[in-house]
Amino acid sequence: MTVRTGLFKLSMNYRHHYHAGNYADVFKHVLLLQLVRAMQRKDKGMLYLDTHAGRGGYDLSVTSLLPDGRSREPEFPAGIGRLWAAAPLPPALADYVDLVRRFNDRHGATGSELKFYPGSPWIAKLLLRPQDRMALCELRPDDAEALDFEFARESRVTVQAIDGYTGLKAMLPPLEKRALVLIDPPFESKAEFVGIVRGIGDALRRMPSAVLAVWYPITERARADEFHYAVRTFATPALVAELMIAGESSAVRMKGCGLLVLNPPWKIEAEIREVLPELAERLMVEAGGAARCWWLVPEQ
Ligand code: SAM
Image 1 (cartoon, rainbow, N blue to C red):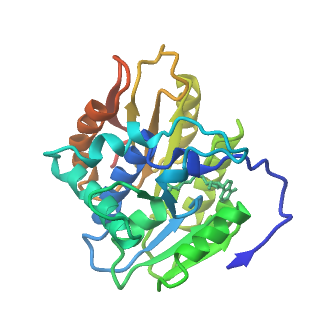
Image 2 (cartoon, rainbow, N blue to C red):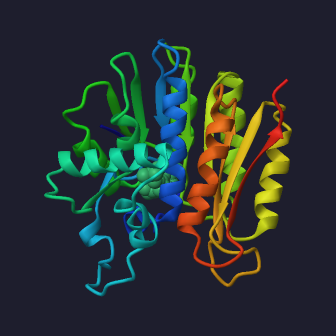
């Protein structure tokens, strides 16, 4: 593992650990799974780059424990918890739950218990083919160490404790000439959208054909709108999927989340459109929840 420190000052209070398996993870990982499978319709290998990878996997029995010994409300019951034992599930959700089951099995969960949750690196790793490769960036030293440990025995995976936007510049374009990049920052700072837009610009300059998937929270509609406005300037095909678990005027803080996909792979739009209503129906917490998908910049 390469560790670079002192590049810049960052407040790093965010721990994905507390949010593992929540509704936002389910939304993001279901669509990530669809994206990986869509990329794999071609035989040629690809690089999967995760710029903000987290720990890789999470033990759900400790995700509600705070460092001072108190506990908080676990988030996964309103996410993966709503799908885990549900049957029947539509194919895309069954595919995702099956992957989460495989992760539980390989980490030693017994019976039908939901004990562990795979982060985006494991979602991708469980799908990786021999011709594919993965590069993972995580800046938080303890999470980077855990991530390195998770993948220590896995071939074709590199873990680096570096800033994800630096990783983006360093790793694109890859030798494979095909790349799927997940940009999934913690949004601790109001400037995160600015960093993402800069990162997208850097990535597209290096590799105009890169498939870039960017997750973002929806707390205020105006901020998502500003982000979309900035993304239009790249004049690159861009598809947006959003899931709202509550209405725009709800008191729920994170009312929804979105995934922006630049250079979306062939056929992915139809697949996303099919799964979104299923996610909304199962994950919404208040009336007014909904899901939609639209082209921010249409394909030519
Ligand atoms: N992608 C993960 C998943 O789906 O399982 C979750 C990632 S979490 C939302 C964001 C992660 O980014 C956190 O683990 C945080 O420590 C890390 N992080 C924060 N700033 C970073 C940066 N500049 N570069 C790389 N990682 C960063």
